[in-house]
Length: 185
Image 1 (cartoon, rainbow, N blue to C red):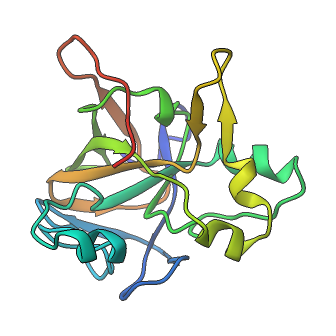
Image 2: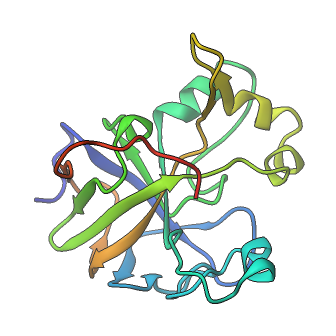
C-alpha cells in the first residue's frame, strides 16, 4: 500500500514534543491507537490543547492527529504566503483528498496499518497570524450563503496503530449515512 504517487497520499509527516505552533518534519511518525502521535505534544486520551485543558482537562482528546491538505499551501502561496508542511502544526500533510469535504466519522487508512477517524475541523486561532501576519484571513472564507469556511485542516483520533511515512497511500472509508458535515472541535 505504500509509495504509490497516484491517488490520495501522504506528502509529509511531523511531530514535536511540548506545545509549539509549528511541528518538526520527520521521516516517519508512529500513531498509537487511542492516543495519537508518539512524541507529539498533543498525544493523549484527554485534551492537550492548552485552552481546552483550562476549561475541562477531563474531556476526550478529539484532536490527536492534525491533517492538512497540501493543496492549501498552493492556495495561500498564490496570496503571497510562504507555508510548508509542518508550519501550521499539522502531523500529516495529504494530497489528493478534499479533507474539508469529508463527513464526520470518515476513516482514513494510511500506509500499512494506521487508521484515523476524522472528528472535525481545526478552528484557526490567532497563533496563525503570529506565524505570518494576515494568514488567518487567508485560511477563512465564506460560501455562497455567507457561512464561514475554515480551511486550516481537520482533526482526528487514532483507531489503529501504525507507522506513517511520506508517499504512503490513503484509503477513504465514509461512515454510514446520513453524513454529518465537519464542525470545529
